[in-house]
Image (spheres, rainbow, N blue to C red):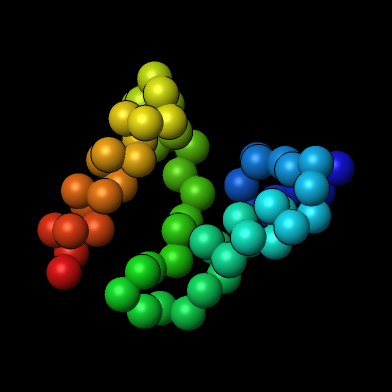
Length: 62
């Protein structure tokens, strides 16, 4: 089991874990680093709702 050190996610496959870690460690570019916010996780009942919100936020930052 591979566990993210930045948030509570865990992965069975190492390649998925590595890809996920890039969300937290990529340099500050147009695609900002993703910080873990436990309060934000609670706001959305589905992953789809969270993704829609994230895309809106990214569009508004440009």
